[in-house]
Length: 377
Image 1 (spheres, rainbow, N blue to C red):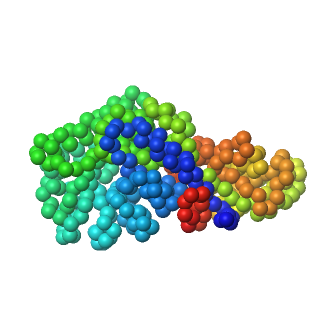
Image 2: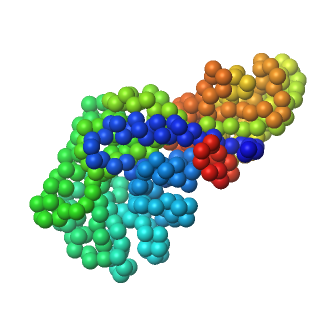
Image 3: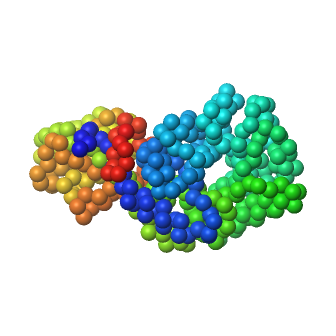
């Protein structure tokens, strides 16, 4: 039996499988799921999640960097791995070595890839309004010229939505404008006799809010993790997503804080009366936002316990005065369920003014990631 340490992440394979099936049910026939497992699979653990998805039949993945892709390859992930971001020319050899597919971020970059002098598989990025990576959609001549570069094997063309999560009329209009631009590029390529490439534009919210679209791939990320970027988000499709990740830590000690005494760095907390406190073995170096100091909560024995004082690099303090039977070695739940209570990544995100994606993707590398049915690392 795996012995849990000071702080750890638990992953639920059944919820991951359920989320995958929920999303696949929204897709048109013939559309393939190409999960985004970048940023350590949104903090969940790219190797664990990648191998589990591969066991579930997934054969295509996308990541942000060559290093992320190499980690998957070295762990035994086969099939297509698309690098969505920039790769330095000094790393082009790794694209070949690991048999990766590189995004063409614009036409000058395509010429850099060509100058490497060896065959490389690529997907052409098209900027339809994100104004980030990709050749601008109106530069159709430059886009077409990429097919003239003999060392580049173009297997895909894609774009990226920027407000697909939005419900306002203006956001919907903008998204449909992106779709129109993308479809125009595809049509013009085919009119010029260019074919044999796959298409994709939808991430998580593209799937949930625009399920009627018919492209070859979709790239779910946060939705596959079973959460939305913000709990308040409303989606067109009512997928029943279940969180895959729980975050837990060990209580190191329990002690008394007398009335008038202060606790933690900067002495930002003062006990108004006798309090029972506990030290939890997790901190901002593990990804707990320091902004939760004196604001956040954790779950202990089915109760909510407030964080007190400043969150430290490796530890934080909680008030357990109203919670019975708290002892060193007990578990504290920072994300997940405990009894009838639950704290979600979205709840933490709302408290510090960010999104679930950031909370999860910042969970640190020293957190052990474990789950039944997956190999631990």
